[in-house]
Length: 431
Ligand SMILES: Cc1cc2nc3c(=O)[nH]c(=O)nc-3n(C[C@H](O)[C@H](O)[C@H](O)COP(=O)(O)OP(=O)(O)OC[C@H]3O[C@@H](n4cnc5c(N)ncnc54)[C@H](O)[C@@H]3O)c2cc1C
Image (cartoon, rainbow, N blue to C red; front, side, top):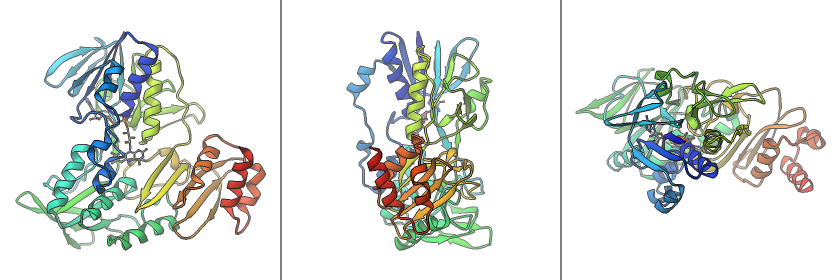
């Protein structure tokens, strides 16, 4: 059996591990166009702030790869010829496959305004982008950051730590309005202001101005202008569906796959940020842009490719991240609606976070140590934990394992409930 994997991200690597756990002899080939290969993309944020050296982002050694027994082809796949089971590569010989995995991830949405192609308009998709940002930060004094979600703040934080003065422009009236509530947005915005970031609400860039191909500033919808040396954008991402589309595979927002990660072609699978995965429990097909689900999907896809039929059952998505320096865990469904600063989905985001069914809110803490719970009839549907993370592990377990919270529901919803104590006690007795 000949397995080919397109994409050297976490989904692709997990697929190889799974294939090897079933088929020790098959021929496995990975094709990837990122010159840096496999590394932690979430870690790029810490590379930008200088907390991690770039070497720390590479979790595998050459020896690890040797043990996985696969051939790496550095290159870009430009066409899938399904009838012939062949891949066409840019400037290289074609490759045949028996089973194919498309794990090509997602890419940043471009800023579509005049001047967006000037040198100094930046995004953060991969290592090369991070290095470009650092290069510009070294020579730039002032930056404008546009967009929302986690990556926009990572850009802000990275630039601030490098001594760049940052203007953060939000099209809406508050940060990440479809995941955070008003109070949580305020906590984040207040911290940004304390770091010296200038926030501009209802601010929309309509032009990036420049001289000799270099950024000199931005012009906004209300006619105001800001001088800056670079513009960093995180306005959402788009799954890379082009290969699948050209091959006639079923796509929607991402490549449509069933719970076995299989496309409408039984020999082609998709996993990770590019896949829009069917969840048999909810009947929905949704996108995640999260490291954990990408790894799990890649692994399940690999097992299925090697003939070990295994359904990928989506868990309540969660992310532990940092928002303006504040550790924040987001679990399950916590928000709804649209965020004017993000088109579709952002990095480190899940569509599931916004599929909120009926629930009641319980919250505690009005400073940096804040907890908000979405309480359903019998289950906790979601939670946000900011600051002190003592509750994040029990809450993650309670939400993902659909634990019956009937014994504590009333206490959680009582006025001035000591939510932390109630959850901690419930968790300890349960254990
Ligand atoms: C800055 C940043 C911050 C993030 N923060 C978080 C976070 O806080 N929490 C979290 O859980 N997740 C976070 N993520 C998201 C997480 O990293 C992704 O969900 C995960 O990396 C997706 O893995 P993947 O294998 O699907 O795709 P990717 O890692 O994107 O890998 C796809 C690979 O395919 C290659 N490729 C594309 N097209 C072709 C082609 N035609 N031929 C050959 N190769 C091709 C690409 O170059 C790339 O190397 C973040 C990502 C970034 C970039």
